[in-house]
Length: 227
Image (cartoon, rainbow, N blue to C red; front, side, top):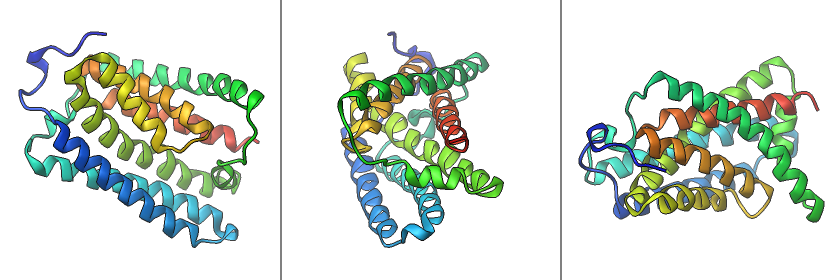
């Protein structure tokens, strides 16, 4: 995988201070969000999962701007650059590929491992009617991907790219997977992280990866509505 040309990227780029700041703030925010969500009863599962989606997006945005405020006060350095239109279409296509890939990953995983359903809240909200599904798509298929891509590609993959493709793509995808917990979603998230990391490294823009993530999450939520 080749890195973006120097002419397409600002000279400054995030480094370890930005990684540590963004990741620490993101983890603290996610833990606090999780504690809040744990106080919401199963009878309000739809509310609980939508709070999680909105909160995830806001935490990611806060983590990005904390990293931005440190040294490199140029959003272009964090991937806020307009890519060629073709890469947005590539991102959409890869989102569909990732959606298909998750069935393969989960089929293999559940052949060997049994674990509780950690997507039950998503499934309840997806099957809660048209309004519930619409709100879920906003929180889980738009806000969550934005927040996560801001942190894991805009900051972490971006900074790690200086050490080469393995660090920038595979390293950031591994961190992204682990943050999702030690369950089947780790492997799904790792796959999505690989695809979005490749696109970020190729284009220097977070937006193709955002499209991958939005399409992937959106198709999963629409699929849950049919179960």
